[in-house]
Length: 488
Image (cartoon, rainbow, N blue to C red; front, top):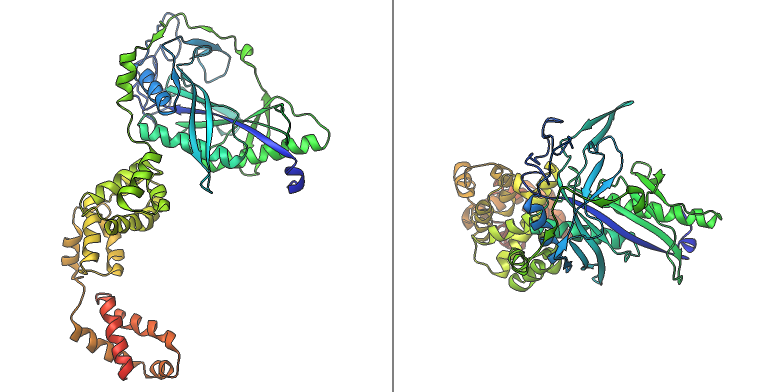
């Protein structure tokens, strides 16, 4: 760990290169499926394997989704662009080159605005967004052997290259999360890092504070989670500062992040663009964009996360924190609105739905490691459960007990309440009788309460609820218990 005083002498300069796999049904230049998880080396054909004499054909959705992303990130859209061949050898690149874009990226000179944890906004520039195809996968999990799965070859990608505008690992994290939010809200990528459909490389350098020139950058790879992006950048910043403080020179290298040890280490000397020998792809025509096409794609852009968050605050009177949590994931925001559509859309109901989603629903998502769509909870069932609480048919405790039964259930909350006999008891005579019974059986604690140990009130409430199997209305229990204790 470097002394904070030494760290404070330097300023990091960070840019991110984000690769997003696109949700097209077929690959970038052939008709092979893009479905993840198939039997290795089965979703391939002569085109994506680069057999001689085969000709690529552009997937129209690769173009459409790229333009959609460009418009959503305030980019200029190039009216005419071409594909290029990026030539290099790697075992999982069977063609020996990758079809990409070089001098004429489809989108350029854009920006997004991120929000730091303290609420301060930061604008991060986007240099370019270009179309390309993915490589295969090298699998190193079998000892000394490396296996190849070429199913991913030719899967459509966009690469989003930022300006070196970020000055901390936190800014980089917020930017990366912002990009993920945009691609998922646009419906062009699932943003899943575990399946490698969203990947990130970080260009990192450091310089003395106040210096004008950038330091020598390195590229950090092997960051397999959103938080590991932040950790890897922090580790590389510290490594570079230590090198400079010891009188060394930062080399232009590709670094790999070791998540277990929390350190970066060199993989290879970093290639420059000329090392790849780019040249125009001879088998694909130039891409031409018309004004009418741009207007058509612009009309497809939905409400994005920040706009939706602000609307939740404005329309439903939700706290900004709740709105931020609910809209961080598009499917969660959709579920919130679906539940609320079954209830009167007032502030009280919005907050009740928000509390349930941020509580039991998100806890279940975390336990099952799945998105909200996969936990088996129907929006109308959660709305009905909340209604049963609000009209005092059931207590909050009973609702919590019922919640697990609602997952993957065809039965509604009302049906389950009726089947289990869980309707909340509000009959004051019955509750009063139980309260008196509890006080009579706990004479010692009653004496302590009378002598001033008023914290025992909660004990008497709990005992009453236990005897009544959680079915008693807690408000009625509290009121009657106070009355009985005053006269006991």
